[in-house]
Length: 507
Image 1 (cartoon, rainbow, N blue to C red):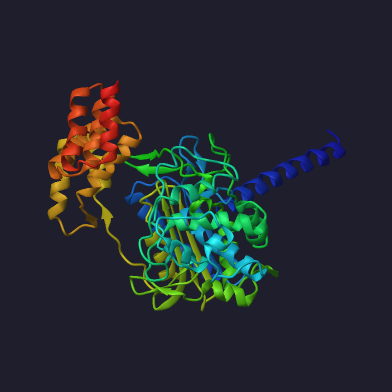
Image 2 (spheres, rainbow, N blue to C red):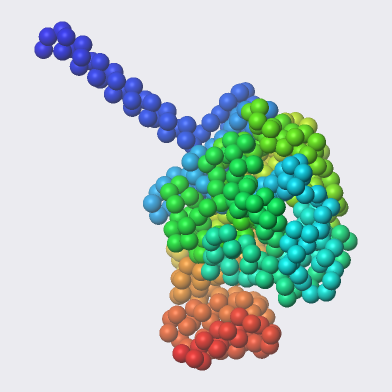
């Protein structure tokens, strides 16, 4: 081999090593970003804290934590799997269903329309949606602001089981107008606070009517894109989960997929945004910059202030702005919102006086996102992260899988009297385990665990109905019927019990 070939050979080797190094760097950058002295401090304390908590709660599903200071993302890290079955790790590309943390995006879109001179917060809903009706005439007094601060009186949920029959398309939101017609207000608008998902979904219709664009198009163009949130979306196919979307999980005896995935276009304004970690960090940066991101004005300062200023008292002694809850933690004011649908949790804090934002997202319920965001706050402000208790259900599940129900119950009852460990015991957790197993169609385990639970509480229509489902799927129609009949003994008006019994009798 002559010198020219030797040089060429080594050039190829150097190039391949460089590519390998770049590839590793790219892979690492997709799951971890740590900057500044504060970011390194957070990483040294928060990361092991989170890892320990996840181990104790048997959690291998995805978790994403993002922290910003000023204009910088100083800590961003993902843990676990977006999809356990395919072993796809959660990363900066992963889209999480953020549930009710979607509401401030809807509120921001309304405030943008106010800034554009297209509506006023004091305007009535019927001004823009004249066919909006409810029982009694008080609904005519509902204003846009009433919905934004949860004082409209519209019941929390006016439709059910929409995850099971998801709707897509521009007409999906219009169905909310039909659903609400047969309901009465819970109270006179503006006189009380009561959190309402259904009211927020009416705002999606209003945004469509006023803007001349679909709800998702308007929010994307006027809120997401100016904030640099180009990887987040409202759009999901009905029958599939796109690449890099986190799957929904719950915890029965292990981490198991939860069906159905919580998405329908009817609920886009209240809970429909799918967001990545870095995009949510950008959302936080926009807030600490009073409506501006990277020099791009999303909301002018005057209208941004309207967005986050208090408008009403909450029952727990804090304030609410326009969707954002205005509270405090560690004696510091925070702007915050939580989100939870079965299979997902999310929570966001903004510390306006400190120019800091924190977001935590998870694709499993019982992921302890609230404790994690508080621990992050404690670390940032040089407090020792607080200790925590863990549900004994994880020890129960571990023992049940390895030694059976009798040993698991023996351990459960021993732990009730043990005050020296970190585990707490709540019998309702046994019901939760059974319910999640029923969702996953683990019929034998469901029957065994819920049969025990009904000896603790024989007045739970929910437990008896799910136990009936387990018997039915184990081909035991006699005991299934007894369970369904039991639900109606407890509550003769229990519709799901009636439906189950009717289906059984018709088979």
